[in-house]
Image (cartoon, rainbow, N blue to C red; front, side):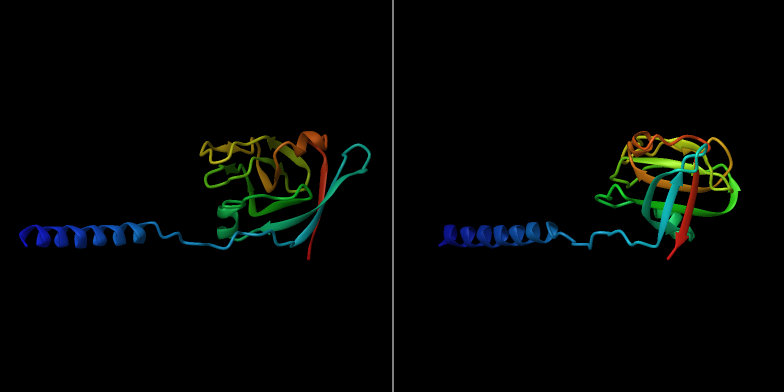
Length: 162
């Protein structure tokens, strides 16, 4: 009888431990962040004014939007990007913390001309990525597209909000 009692206590303890394990493995499901088209952006070659590319953009202009950017995104189409609009002109610093996508960051001056680049950034890297010069805007696109589209300092950008 004593052995049966010890076995019952052991079995009940094992059940309690198992139920605790199951609770600790609960997965919180979140909705994926999807692209929301808020505008259209076109990049022109500086010397010829010929169109290099047109793309759909999301616009980040509030503090929350500019601090979050493309964090937590799983993917982005080649014809999509995020345009950051800042309230003032100054040197900017970006980082890739919580950003799963490798990106090119294109910094634009107050006249919407390309001022500098940070190309092929590394996902999750917390190293600061400076604009090198004072800027008013930044455009994030998938890594490698700046090179593919042959973008250069001085090329012009135009955008329209929807």
